[in-house]
Amino acid sequence: MPILQRLTKLSRNLYSFKNVIQNYPRRNESFLSASRQTSTLKTVLKASLIGISIGFPVGVVITTGYSWYVNKEASKTYHLEGKVRKIEILQNKPPVPVSRKIVSSVDITDLKLTLFQYQTCPFCCKVRTFLDYYGISYDVVEVDPVLRKEISWSSYKKVPILLAQVKSGYQPLNDSSMIISLLASYLKDRSQKIDDLTKHYPSIAMHDENKKLKYEIMNKYFLMYQDNLPSDTVMDEIMEERKWRMWVDDVLVHTLSPNVYRTFNEAYDTFNWFCKVGKWEEYFPTWERLIMINVGAIAMWLISKRLKKRHNLKDDVRQSFYDEINKWLFAIKKRGGTFMGGEKPNLSDLAVYGILKSIEGCNAFKDALDNTNLGTWYNAMMKEVETHSGSKYLATK
Image 1 (cartoon, helix red, strand yellow):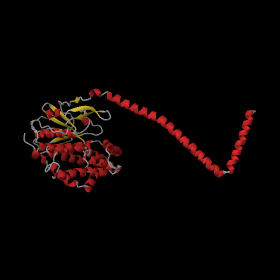
Image 2 (cartoon, rainbow, N blue to C red):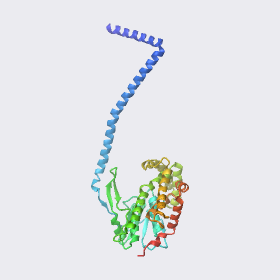
Image 3 (tube, one colour):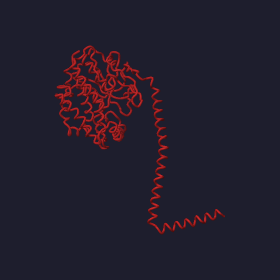
Image 4 (cartoon, one colour):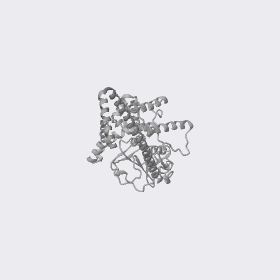
């Protein structure tokens, strides 16, 4: 009975409360609204506290787990830290057909070189620019960018790879800057042997900031003078040249992709130009060429967004491109010559020209000609390279 009485009393109280609400709608609407707001606020606060209490430890677990995994993977290669990876001389030349031969009538070097490359790769363009400027003959092997079967013989899976014939076989040379430094050292003192010079550019194992093992080529911006050390004045010039060569690899080259793949249409146009200048119709089957153009354009358009962020480019990536070009042109103007090397190009001129040559048919390059004073220097460089003017500075053996 007491329970029934309480239930009856509760129902009468609820009925009375309902009448109060009906008689005073405005006042109680305000009251209920405030109550609901208070209730909602409490719910949000509770949800936030629950989210924090759950999210924080979960985040800690995930972060800790990932760090543990990275450290565990890195621990597998810690024993390789500081080890030198020797690039072995090949006894026989890889049985890969040559795509084309570049024959220079002014070549006096006796070098027998084969360049494994992508035609529009900026780093491959750097090497070709160097060889063309000095009038050096070489064979070209156009590497299939999908299957890469042309470099299956090499543990180094990037391009360019320059294969130099030496007395004991064929010496592979990797990394564009190292290739250029080694060949420049040889051209300055041709008593040095190519395979001996490679010992001055060891490939050392090290872990990067993400604890991933990589091999870094030491001294790749340095020329080897042996006992013929240059004067202090010349050394200052060499230091300046080296600074700008590093700038090309560390800064300028990273402005290219976000610009040539800025929009999907630009990316598609860029790949069609790659196809034309790289003669893909001649070297690759139709199905592969279509994949390279269409899938490549979509992929690089998406990747370019990440590259823009990674390299801290401006929202208008063209402006970042123009800024770096203007920085280069201002430095040349400050030095007072036609080129960074004065009245003739030095290695930094060749490096910048090679990098920009790789996008010559793209809208980004045309826009740079319209919005900066690049044309004067670029046209002067084109004349120097195409006439092999560097050959006249080479000493006879």
